[in-house]
Image 1 (cartoon, rainbow, N blue to C red):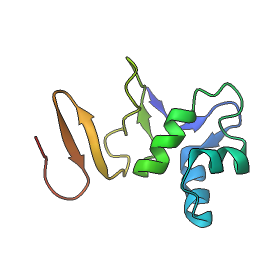
Image 2 (image 1 turned 120 degrees about the vertical axis):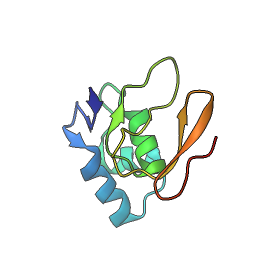
Image 3 (image 1 turned 135 degrees about the horizontal axis):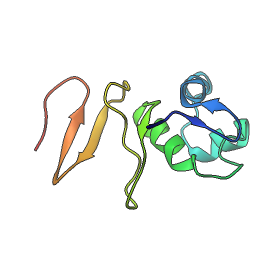
Image 4 (image 1 turned 90 degrees about the vertical axis):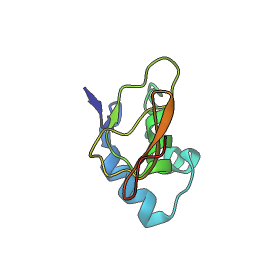
Length: 96
């Protein structure tokens, strides 16, 4: 199961990412203030924060207090936690 939206306001992370890019928003607070996404139950806030950070619009379900991880093939770039090390997601190579 992938997390792709703010359920309370039916705002997809893809639509939110477009707004973030268009308005040069750089924080969760800006997205919340301008879109209301995250102001319902609040469970999407960590996903919105990771969307801002990574550019990903699809995430695996966050478990065990770890931050949400971009789903494979979600278009995110950056470091993704994986097992004992880290994996680079995007162009380039894996870093152990």
